[in-house]
Image 1 (cartoon, helix red, strand yellow):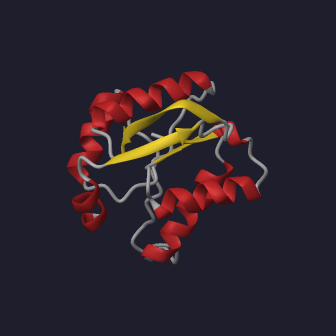
Image 2 (spheres, rainbow, N blue to C red):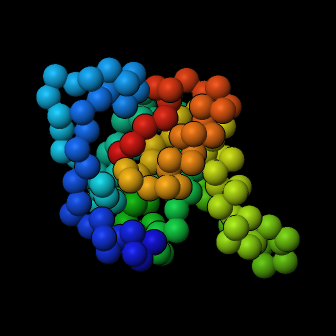
Length: 138
């Protein structure tokens, strides 16, 4: 996370197609790769309303302070996979696989631009035959 955050802080992504349909946009947009916790909370709330979701699963390696800021902005605590100390599923690799699978079968998914983790989840959602419009970037 540190390298991604360092290199993508204030970075913009040029978007020239509708990400849900693949149709070209009349004009390209420059969208931020990373969002503040407050911006992310607003996007999550909009997507929750759009897809009639009552819960959020957060797959992130954000630090405790960043998660606390997001929780404060949301007004609730998202679910996260947190294995017990004695669990056989506590290795970083196993946590990533479980996070990916949970996100792949969720009703909706929002990911970070230019993130390989997000790309893998969106690809898995296609394999799971999820509607393309239910997976998007922030």
